[in-house]
Image (tube, rainbow, N blue to C red; front, top):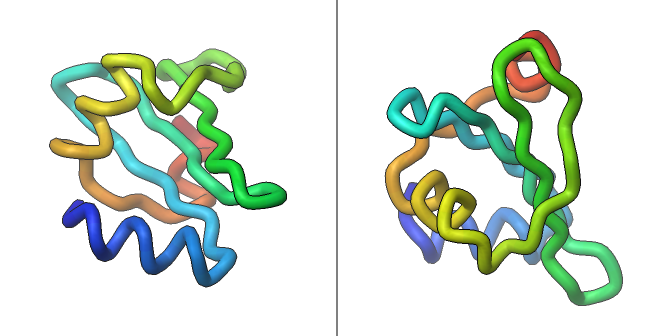
Length: 75
């Protein structure tokens, strides 16, 4: 996803879900009180909060594909 597209969605209050097959993980991003919150989820596991500065999160932001909430929930 393009960084400016991600930024615009987050600033508009939209939760963004990204999947990266290479990393075998999906992330959920949203803004809460001006801070971006990020959660990571591996296939078949529950999500966990993780710093946005985490290398895997950064890799998924740069190389992942946007997915729907329902796709994220099923992952």
